[in-house]
Amino acid sequence: METLTWQRMKLFPDTAEITAVANNEVLTIAGCDLAVLAERYGTPLYLYDRATLDAAVSTYRDALSEFYPGSSGLTYAGKAFNCTALAQWADRSGLCIDFTGVGELRIADSAGMSRNRIVVHGVNKSPADLAAAIVQAGVLVVDNLLELERLIGLRCQLSSFPDLWLRYRPGLAVNTHAHTQTGQDESKFGMGRDEILRAVRLCRQNSLPLKGLHFHQGSHFRDPGPLRYALDKVLDLMLAVQAEPDWVVCPGGGWGVAYHEDDLPQPDREEYVRTIAGSLIAGCRQRRLVLPHLQLEPGRSLVARAGVALYRAGTVKQSADRRWVLLDGGLADNPRPALYGARYSALPVRNPRRSATGAYWLAGPYCESGDVLIGDLPLPEVEPGDLIAIPASGAYQLSMSSNYNGACRPAVLWLEDGEPRLIQAREMPEDLVRRDRRLWPIKTSEERRTANGRSRA
Image (tube, rainbow, N blue to C red; front, top):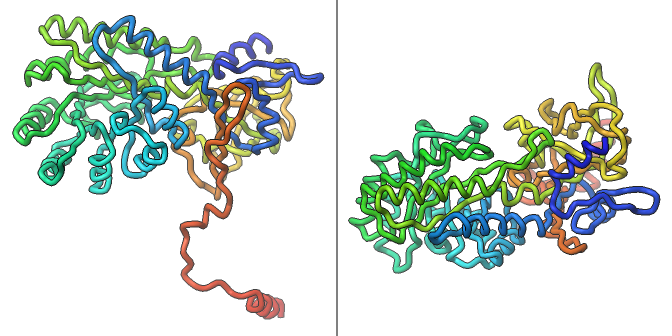
C-alpha cells in the first residue's frame, strides 16, 4: 500500500504530507492537521491550498514567458469554483476572472475586483446580465448575433463600454466527455465563420470596441492537437477581416488534471502552452500578421489540485459483492461522478500508509443509486468515524453543488502557512428555508396540542 499511497499523494496539493502525530501518522496540508480541521469545522469540509494555486500560476507564467514572445495573460475560470476570497486571490495575483451572469458579478463586486480583470461570458445573457456586464466588466464575450444587436441598441445610451470579444465556434471539439465538448459544429456555444464576419462588420459600422476572438473546444482534455486546427481558423478570420494589431486571441481553457493514480503523470502544462504559442507564432508568420495578445484560460488545471474534500465515514457495510463506505457527503457537493463518470481516488487521514485490506465503494448519504463518489478503490480497513480525503476536488464540485435531500453545502477553508481561514461558512438548515414563503399561517402551540388531542381521540 505504501507505493500506492505515494502515487496518490501526487494527486494532492503541493504542501500535502504524511506527518507523525503522537503514535500515529496523519495527512497534513500547508502544515494543517486534517483531523484537527475536521474536529473544528465539521465535515464535509473543502480545503484550498494557496501554495498550490500560486505554483500553478507561476508555471503558466513561466511557460508563456519562455514560449510566447508576444504579450500574454491568464484568466481564472470562475465557474470552476468562485467565492469572494478566490476572486480576491485572483485579482491580487494579476489574473482576470471569467464570470457568467449577474449572480457571479455580485461576487466580483463583493471582492472589490478591478474592472479590467473582469471577463463576462454567457450563451444566453439576460437583459440584467448584459446591464451588469456593461457596468462592471472590462471584457464582454459576445456569443451570438442577437446579443450583438442588443448591445448595439445599448451602445448609444452609454458613454462607457467594455471591450468586446467574439466567441467563435471552430467546428472541432477536443477529445473529452460529450457533456463537456464545446467546439463542434452542433455546439450551442458561439458563432460560425459567416456569423463572425457579419459580427465584425456590425461592430465596425456601429463603432463598438471589438478587440478579439475567443473560442473553447471542451473541458478536461490532454491532447492539445485540436487547438492547432482552431488557431489556424482564427488566424484566417483575423486575416480576412484585417484585424487590428492589438487584438486578443483567447483559446479558452480546459487543460486536464489527474483525478486518479491511473491518470498520472499530470498533464504537462508546458506542453499545452508550447502548442498554443508555437501554433500562433507559425501561423502569424505564415500570414504576415502581428502576434496578438494571447490570453489563456487554464481552467481546472489552475485550481483542481489545490482542493481537497474531507468526509467522515458513517456506515461500513457489505452488499452481495461490494464493501460500502457511506460518507457524510457525495452527490450534493460533487455531482461529477454522476454527471461525467469522473473517477477519483482517496486516502484515509489516519495512518494512510497502512496496507490495503480490499476494495471499497465510497458513496454518499443521498437517495440516488448514482450517489457513488468512488468505486472499487483499494484502501486500508475503514471503520465508522474514519476521515477520508479525496484529492483534486478544487474544480467543478462546489460550483455545481445542490441542496438535494436537504443537504447543507460544506464549509470551505483557505490553508496558508499552517493557518486555516474560513472563506465560506457551512450552510445551516435555517438557510434552506430562508427564501421560502408560507401559503398558510402555522398553527400556534395551543392549536397543535388541540389537534393532536383530537387525532388521538
